[in-house]
Image (cartoon, rainbow, N blue to C red; front, side, top):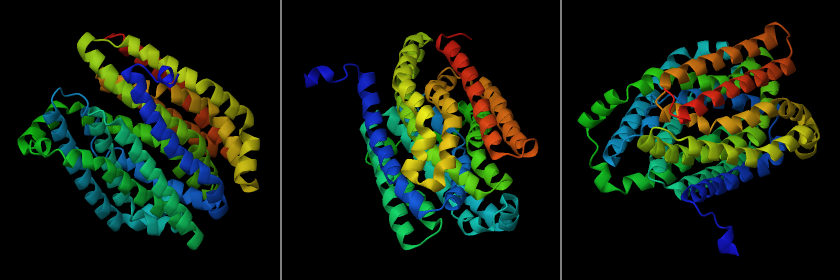
Amino acid sequence: MIEKLKPKSEFSRNVLTLMSGTTVAQAIPIAISPILTRIYTPEDFGLFGTFLALSTILGGISNAKYELAIMLPRKDEDAINIFALGFIISSIFSLLLLVFILLFDDYLIELLGNETIRQWIYFIPLIVFFIGFFNILNYFNNRKKNYRDIANSKIVKSIVLAVVQLSVGLVKGGVIGLVSGQIVSQMFANVRLLKNIINDKNLMSKISKVKMIALAKKYKNFPKFLILAHGMNTMSSQSPFILLSTFFNATIAGFFLLTQRVVGMPMSLVARSIGDVFREEASSQFRKNGECKAIYISTLKRLLIIGTIPFILLFMASPTLFIFVFGDDWGVAGVYAQILTPMFFLQFITSPLSNMFMIAEKQQLDLSWQIFLFVLIMTSLFSGKYVFDDSFMAISLFSLSYSLSYIVNGIMTYKFSKGIQ
């Protein structure tokens, strides 16, 4: 009986491996969230959200987007040289960022409008480096189909994050526990994935300066188009943490962060696990046949089956559920969750399939879509402040803008999967 329940295809087994790791990894921070909301204030969460948003935006472009090219070469020798190239770029980027912050810290604090964050902006270059390093580690391990190790790295990260945030928060109040937990946990996750690469001495020996330069030129479209494109995408998703805090206050940003933490993050990571496997399978099929419509449709069906019922229940129950689980002080976050549910659902459906932009090498169209998204998001947030002067309206417009953009994204990627030029 057990054997019958086991997934038969390699695709399903790989998805299950990554989803299992993701489920465990996300269960930990979600489980401790009711405790964290009683240790930390909404303002603490808001300040942490600003720190994390800035780190995420910069970390996402710290490799010049060369990590996305790791999946493409036929030879592992080329892939390891792209990995090395990304590591060097990320290291230089983080060092330059540190110098910039040291020179212009007063201006940055004034721009953010919150003096409390001063002591934490100096740690941003460190977490930016860790994020960039994790991205290239994740893609290389994905290429080698080390799905179990990827899953375990997520679990290790969540355990360390929980331990640090709880222990430091109980000993010392303020945002220090949230920030330190993020830094330490990211470091542990990187170490877990790095072992697979440094243990392969033969592959490491094939790293060369000449090869890195040649590959940097060959895949120059990735930094040329995707730094701006994906930078805009990250800014679109992370800007609410910064702008809600600047336009309104850190407490509002804290409510938004909790919503993302307990709703958006688990769903996005489950979708990312499916997307990791889809990227590998679809890349292979696209290289052979010039199209991958079958794997695209089957993945879309899986996403719909997994996501529909949970999101319906979330929409119906979130306001009451948030008060019950996280306390009376966090009721507003439940309303935010309800407003954002349509966006979360469409994000869950389309984000794994958006890998088609890279697979079909449609970087220019990806850039166009990202610009479209960024303009909509900025318009929605600025309208929420300067037209309506209401945080609920700002978040409602934000959700509507994202939902519309995801629908457009889905239509485009489906056409790519059919090999339409």
